[in-house]
Amino acid sequence: MLKTSLQDLGKLVRGGRKLVQLTGKEGKTDIRGVAVVCVLFIQTVSMGNCCSDVSSGAGAIAGVGGTAAISSARGTTNDAVDYYLKSRGFNGLFSHIELSFCASNLRDRDVLSKSDPMVVVYRKEKDETLSEVYRSEVVLNSLAPKWIKKFTLAYHFETVQTFLFRVYDVDTQYQNSKEEMLKLDQQQFLGEATCVLSEIITKSTKTITLELKRKEGVAAQTQHHHGKLIIHAEESLASKITTEIVFRCSSLESKDLFSKSDPFLVVSKIVEQGTPIPVSKTEVLKNNLNPIWKPLFLSVQQAGSKDSPLIIECSDFNSNGKHSLIGKVQKSLSDLEKLHLTGQGINLSLPTTGAGQSKSQLFVDKFTETVQHTFLEYLASGFELSFMVAVDFTASNGNPRLPDSLHYIDPSGHLNAYQRAIVDVGEVLQFYDSDKRFPAWGFGARPIDSPVSHCFNLNGSSSYSEVDGIQGIMTSYTSALFNVSLAGPTLFGPVINSAAMIASQSLAQGSRRYYVLLIITDGVITDLQETKDALVSASDLPLSMLIVGVGGADFKEMEILDADRGERLESSSGRVASRDIVQFVALRDVQHGQVSVVQALLAELPSQFLTYMRIRNMKPVPL
Image (cartoon, rainbow, N blue to C red; front, top):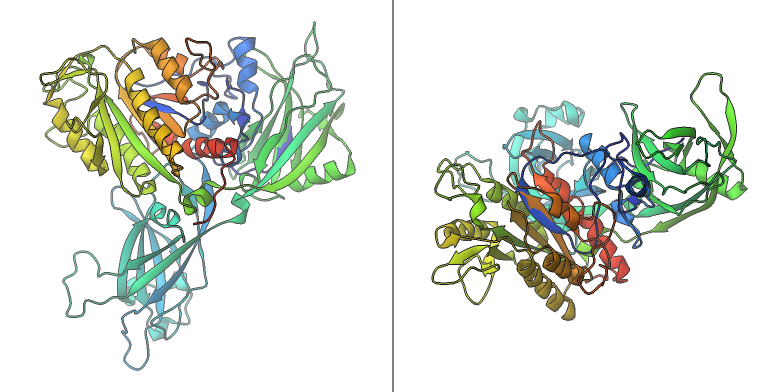
């Protein structure tokens, strides 16, 4: 095992379509592609046994690849690694962002000179609690300061990152004190403003101007002017640098009695707690003691730096999930680059005391660095994510007027599963859509004086499906519950085709939009082949479909759509999907402060978006 340093946050490895969790559990197939369908079922997902057979288990290991940000068009992200990371709190595609600050027209609180301003930044949680995360330096005698000290943070697509910015005038007697030692209640408050990080990075200039206001709850003064705070975001270069590495081994030890070893590599990063976090893995090569694996793609950001240590383990694949370690080694990206330049190999070692080095050697046949276009670069060039939703109104949900119904509207304001899914996904995606008009449909119900419909406009209109904002979806959903009769059966094909038509028309018009369809359902679909046909047809479009389940239904057919055997969907005419496009998960409550299942799904979207753009060779051309 080679210990090299790669960044520890989510989606690090592109792998085969069937993926294996390192603990031997079987993860669901990762189908990150251009289109992903999101259907919500209210039930907990159980991960079954991962390496239950050679055909599916070996495919699960097959992880050629790198980060979500730099996934090659050839493969998908490794779900086993994703699950491992998420279970330990590492979620989603992220970029290091630097925020810089300046202000204009600040209030002058000093008598004989101008104010001496300082910026303080707080992270604002959903429950409105604040935690301080940054203080700038103090700029003397300025009502239009430009602070030098940057605020560095990680941008996570799948969460809403809200910040509160406060500006203080530091009293003269404290100006020789370190900023972190200053007591803010002893300084004069100049103004505050709040925004979400997504609001900044979606601007073409990555700059936002905020009006400073008085503190909430403080009575208005005669002077209403507080000035402006200008915030600029810059993505770290390390977010863009990707390494492509081809590993080779020679003279591997055979761990099998009647055949040669089936080797694969796992690259892990050592984190603070000392536990290795897997960030990439190769495919399994059958019966091969001198393997040459397909390229791995690793970002410098994943490694932390080129000098951070990584562990590389070479193991013999076993279908029961108990893989046999052949050997390991610890190196950094810089070390791997030197191995490539010199052409030398390095001996693998076993942790067994006194075992020494084996004859098995690891070589680096290729090591290149490239600068990849990032998700944020596409956003800055005008690309948007457009949210669409489809809600299951079949009778199996239960009478909406009764508390045991999945559609029950609680008078206390507690959200039901459908409402929670809409909010969890919508509150993130709304910042990436400029007009915030979202197509919303229902299916499996009988509108007034109409036959059963499997795709009706949630707003009740016969001519258009869009509603205004997330609140518009919520209002239309509630209204529809009392204006339609729940019926059945559960058909996905019509709503998928409606979403695909919008995406197709947008593509034909040259629009810079990528669509995300959320399907929320409680039932087993009855049009499986028609759904497959619709998904295969949609697989070439800028469309992701998230399937999340609510309720206690049987998920077997959903997992077929989720391609958990590593097989791409095939239409009734024999056409195979150009890529896997469905991501299915069962909705569960957020526990112990961990990210919700819906947010975990959203974490995959930037990867799917980037894969689509690269396959179509679409570049982020500046506006």
